[in-house]
Amino acid sequence: ITSTAMVVSYFNSLKSEPAIKPPGVAQWLLDNNFRDDKTNSSTGATCDGVTHEAIRAAGLHLGNLTRAEEASDLSVLKDWLAGGPVILHVRARPASPGGCKFTNHGHYIVATGVLAPGDRYSINDPASASPARAEGTAEEIEKGCLLVGLIRMRP
Image 1 (cartoon, rainbow, N blue to C red):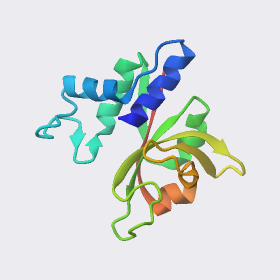
Image 2: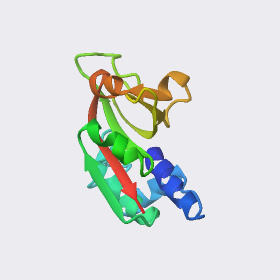
Image 3: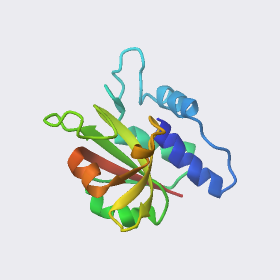
Image 4: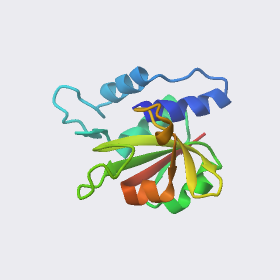
């Protein structure tokens, strides 16, 4: 929810539109049956939060964005970042407790840029202000964590 708000707010700022706050995203997801905090049985809801489908739908509606797409391979990230921030869905690897520095379960983070020498990315992690989690290498994202997918939204 917070990662979605971060990306939508970024694109809204380019159009001088107001930022979207996480409670607004959460309410939209509830109102549109992508989340049900009582039974967790809605389309687009998971035990960890919401699905990629729900994130894409919220971005398209709340940000008046026209495109939302997914990939499962980190190889597209550098190209995608040229157009703005990208949401990454990462999970901890069951066989490697503590191996994913971003989560012990499942989590959405936002990649915002490429750092030199080119295999490191600046990361906005809504769950942490730790400098260690403000960047990640391709290896940390794909090998330390299980990369579930990438979501990009565009105006």
